[in-house]
Image (tube, rainbow, N blue to C red; front, side, top):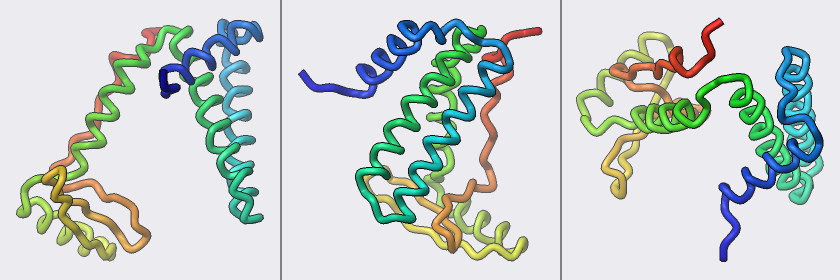
Length: 155
């Protein structure tokens, strides 16, 4: 049997249930969870500064753990988190165009803003990747942002 992300998420859910924090979803509880995320991300940064690979890995895994705790709190607050996760993942994939004409238009679009971009073709997925000089993946001109408005609780 192989341990995977679903097992990790289950143990994270169990952790917060055992700790009595899973149902704590007031604004301050959400803020507290955000602070935990920030602490763990700081641990990654410290590991990078110190060239400490163990600290980097520990910080990355702990960051995922507390982010999943954040998602758990949202779910307990009435957010439709799994639907949102699926939509965002699929939407992020739409950042990789299949049409070279879209790539050309996108590069021209960013050049007008003073942002130099380059592209490469991923043969395995049959998609283009458009990046800026900082290696950030850029959205193509035909990109449509995901709508999550129906995944949040109505007040």
